[in-house]
Length: 338
View (cartoon, rainbow, N blue to C red):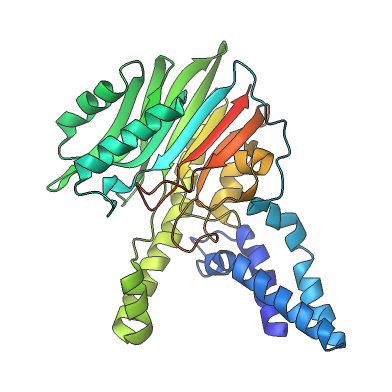
């Protein structure tokens, strides 16, 4: 009980430590939900046995009341009726259109485009967008979204190109990208005038773990594989706070309110989430319901895709479409009023 309680308390404090300096604290944050469940089971077990030790898991669980709402909400806080002028944003990591449910990337890409058209969003932010070559990106997007402004940055490789795409119904005022040091991930930003006010929309894809379940299983059996997996996890964890720092520097220099979207590759109990949330609202916390997991593997543990809006915005709806199978991520859809 003491061990389980201490581990849960460590998960609470994981947001206070910069992972670039104390990387292992992020592991405790990742384990928040399983540790909370373990302590809850131990609490009931102690109560059934009428043991005075029930106080140990009880004290450990109490702070979770303030945090659990980031993972699960029984009902939305806001009025769920969007006004006529409400803005609708979608963020979606399309996983390079590599879903096993389709015979080719082209077929998957076509299905994703049809799906996105049906959402009728004002802004669509895509991560891990893939094409065979960078020359075909704009024609493909313009063909599917002729009435949208198309902005993107992709990295060409010998096996195609990939990157971030932002589609918008508003005309672009300014754009740019944030190249993360020593990484193939990036963030792009676009400035638009919305309801007579300029806003900057960030489309972020922070450092991934890039570890398959197969490799994870091998690491439990093989010592050398375990060391490689550990190094990969450590590298990813220490890279993200630096990338967050680059984004925050750009935000501080921007004269407009900012909206952050994308795949942060970190949970709501992380340094990444808490730093990017400052001065903003989490669309799920404001208007979501149920579990908000956005990553299909280890569901419902992993919520790693977000839409964070300025505090003056009123979030009306938040949805995670977990019925899609185009990617290992689910699309996140939110509407809000300024």
